Length: 358
Image (cartoon, rainbow, N blue to C red; front, side):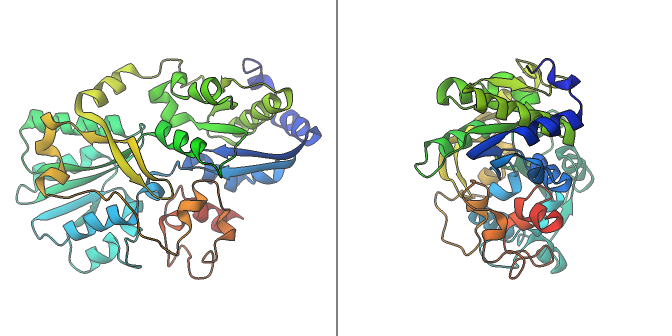
């Protein structure tokens, strides 16, 4: 079926979707890029009656708990430190509403936006008087690039470059969701970017161990619609397998070179996720051999093991338990101009997508 789905035109896909009927079927897109494109293209309105599409923990900024954000906010007070980060992280508040890296920068903290860890590495070379700390946020998609930056720093003998490891692994998060008593999903739209690294094999556990249909998808509206159709065909026919509609970039085995680089520099560690709690082996920590480039080691930072309660319901949104509009803060106390939590901040955030397009 997956081999011929690419030949099916979008109007034909929509016609088949329109003909389907289901009763309380719940699907989940895992990737934040999918979340934003689904909202932009109005895809939820095109789904068959009885089908709900929920957002999962695929936004790396969103899953970072406020207590971890507090760590680098505190670190920004160190006059010798320059914090470097992707842009979204500058606007995410920690435990105190409104306390962001962007506000700290206005107050005089040394904070720079970068587009890759290599940009941060360049700053370390041009600013030897500063301790350059890169906030290593992301999933398997960005982890290889962060590992490459650490290897390059070691080769260049840079002593003023470190990474705060905030990278996450997708599989442990999905397993945690699937083990929850109050979680029920009938099919997963799997992230194409992550699968480029992990390969198809990174998501085979969904049908093989949990009996849940899964489709690896690209990011164009046509890609997403065809993938959702495949999911619903499986559910209709009582089947559960992994299909790949993003074969132009995702192979069965993935990118072995990128994974080898990750394994050389990084290792699994336990991590606290917003909305999911502490998940064993769910993050990419920096190996002991590269501890000189680990900001948590250099500055004596301890990652939190537990989150305090917060009015922000972002954690419930990214675990499929709540629609963004159902949060009592949505659109009133929490807006893109004055966000309460990361789901309204991030360019991949479910609340930001809902606010902008729905």
